[in-house]
Amino acid sequence: MAKSTSSVLTPDICIIGAGSGGLVVASAAASFGVDVVLIERHKMGGDCLNYGCVPSKAIIAAAKHAHAIREAPEFGVAAGDPKVNFKKVNSHIQGVIETIAPMDSVERFESLGVTVLQADAEFSDAKTVVAGEHTIKARRFVVATGSAAFVPPIPGLDKINYLTNETLFDQTRNPGHLLVIGGGPIGMEMAQAHHRLGAKVTVLEGAKALGNDDPELTAIVLERLREEGITILENTKVMEVESLPKDKVRLHLEREEDGEKTTQTLDGDRVLVATGRAASVEGLGLDKAGIDFTRRGIKVDKTMRTTNKRVYAIGDVAGGLQFTHVAGYHAGLVVRAILFRLKAKEDTHIIPWCTYTQPELAHVGMDEKTAREKLGSGMTILRWPYAENDRAQAEKTTTGLIKIITDKKGVICGVSIVGSMAGEMMNMWALAITKKLKVRDITSYIPPYPTMSEIGKRAATSYYADMPKKPFIRSVVKFLQKFG
Image 1 (cartoon, one colour):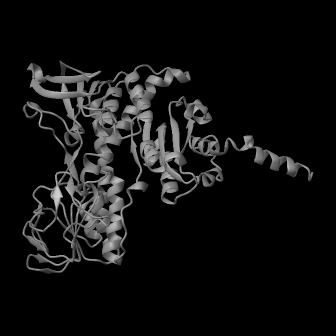
Image 2 (cartoon, one colour):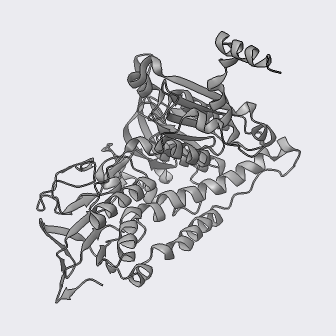
Image 3 (cartoon, one colour):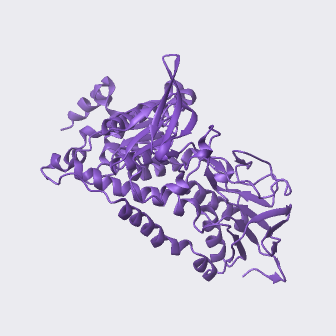
């Protein structure tokens, strides 16, 4: 436990924020017998457990079951239309959170030897943090305060009871016509989930939906969502929000098509704001500690160190990729730096991500655009469709493909997958990118049959498709045949 003199704590490490990144640092450091103070002003487990990854995947799972019932006749099974009880769906979501919560609880971390303070934290100077009645003077500080839903300054939005990811998972009834502002991963995942659970859904995106992923692959996802009945309006800005009688809302829109702008209105029942995340930096007293930051987050170097050398920042608050597994990755870098004085550096090239729509969309390494810029003519793109995979045919999940990008030496530089279980398959490709494996490494392993992962090996094998046509190779084969 941290040493205490009155209200002054002098731990080795002080962590601000008990989300996924902060908890990893705390548990890892404590396991080595290091004195740790962990400060959390709200809920242990942070956004991921309470408002993000866990509840969103729980509602997606419920929605998949509803959709499976609708698809059952295609397999010769008559099940009728699904009957969705939103209260029970909500109970499922809350049950998943409650099951996982003990692993992130105050009690567990105190049992590990961590001093947990439930209070607001603020730097009073470069070496000191104040949390409630406590003053903490630590050798090193780690800021892991995460991010919160960004709410754009749309006139009238503050006059309605809009939803964000922090309130969406408290709903116990069908939202009716759900208007989703934002066509990024969160917006599209929640749009599909709620549509499958019986809501009417319209998505409004100011630019391109799923615009941070490969256009070839996102087109497949968006086509599927539209086929299911979700309306997706791209290049559409919400200019004003109007409250209507009976708790309904009206959005005033500006749309751009073929260079022409038009205006229209759209009525609905509830509004979900899914326009991205804002780093949680307010109230931390970062300026008092000499820590540079912007609205995007805290400025860090490749080792996750801030402009105050005593302080590290990890996860969403560091202003980079905003994923739970990135926060965990950052935590590992910081633990190595603080405990073992190793200069471990962040490498964003090896970080995978996945959007959990159906079909799923996953990626790691270079995308095609980046590869063309960096590799030029040395780039090779290998593709293989789900439609030529036997397991996909058996399960009627033939929509999708894998795209593998290699350099001129056959080193795997990037992989993108759209289709069933893309996120699960991406695990192997993240390892391949991290270890700088070559195509021949993939062709040498044996995947079990029949599995979706076979599409990766089929794509890798296609790298050698032209070998039999090469005169030199053919002459070698003929020469060797002479020896019987």
